[in-house]
Image 1 (cartoon, protein in one colour):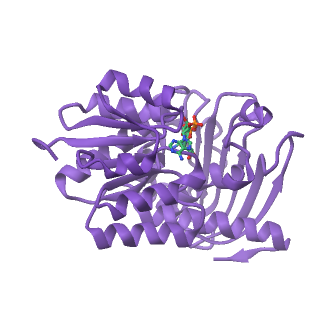
Image 2 (cartoon, protein in one colour):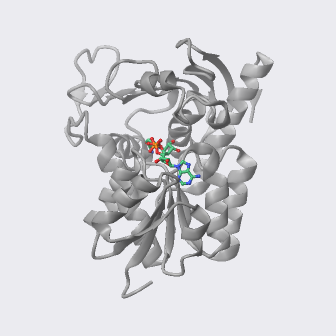
Length: 339
Ligand SMILES: NC(=O)c1ccc[n+]([C@@H]2O[C@H](COP(=O)([O-])OP(=O)(O)OC[C@H]3O[C@@H](n4cnc5c(N)ncnc54)[C@H](O)[C@@H]3O)[C@@H](O)[C@H]2O)c1
C-alpha cells in the first residue's frame, strides 16, 4: 500500500462493477482503482480509462501485478472461487461478489486460505448495509417483536432478457439458478438476524421456456430458534428488482417492502390495523441497493486500512451457500434436508 491508500484491481467490469467503482471513487482519499481486468478487452479499456488504470484480459496477470493490494472479484459465479483463491494465494486482500463460491467446501477453503495468508477477505454481501434491515436488527435487539415465530423474504425482479439471450451467464447451468443467485442474500440475512437455518425443503421451477435452470424457487424450513421461514426467489417478475421481509413475533410484526412507502411498518398486535411507519428508513426504491453496495465496498477498504475484520462475516456467507446447497439437495430428493 502507498501512503495509506489501498490499490484496487477489479476483475470483471460488468453491470454491478459500476457500483463497486462508485464506492471506490467516492473514497479516493483511501483507495485507488489501479487495474481493471475483463475478458472483453474493449470493456476493460473503457472502464480503466477514467482511473488511468492498467488493463488486463487475464485475471492471473492482474493478480501478479505487484502494485495491486486488493482484488475485487466481480465475475460470474463459477469464476468466484478460482479467481479469489488465486488472489489470496498471491497474498492479496480479496472482496468476492456473492455467492462466495459454488459449494460450501470452496467457500470454507477461501476463508481458511485468507486466514493462513493473514489477508482481509469477505463476500460482497450488501444485506447488512441495507438501511431497512439495520433498523430491523435494532428493533429485534430491543426485543420489539418478542419471540420470533415466522420470517418471510422475497427477492424478485426480471432476468428474462438475459435468459432469453442465451448468451449470458445468468440462467446457465454452470452458474446455477436463481435459488443460489438471490437465495444467498436471504440466507445471509437469516444467519445474521436469526441465527441461521436448521432445515429446508425447496421447490424450483422453470417458468420461462428458455430457462435451463430454476428461474423461480420457494424454500421453506426452520430457523435456529425453531421459528418457521419461507423465502421466494424469482427472476421472472416484470417489476423493479426489489426485496421484501416480514418478521412476525409474539409481540407484533415488521414488514419491509422496498417498493412501498413507507418502506418499514411496525405492527404492534392484531388490533394495530395501520401500524407505525419506521421513519428512520427513507423510501428509496431505486437507491437502497446502490447505497448498500457502496457502503459494503467502502467498509472493506476501511477494514484493510484499520486492520480489523470487515462488517460482513464470511462465515455467514459460507452458511448461505450451505443453505442453498441443502435446498438444491432437497429439490433433488423431494424431501426436507437438515443442515
Ligand atoms: N450484490 C448484489 O446484489 C449483486 C447484484 C448484481 C450482481 N452481483 C454479482 O456480481 C457478479 C457479476 O454480475 P454482473 O451482473 O455484473 O455480470 P455482468 O455479466 O454484467 O458482468 C460480468 C463481467 O465479467 C466479465 N468476465 C466473465 N468471465 C471473466 C473472467 N474469467 N475474467 C475476467 N472477466 C470475466 C464479463 O466479460 C463481464 O464484463 C455475479 O456473480 C453476480 O451474482 C451481485
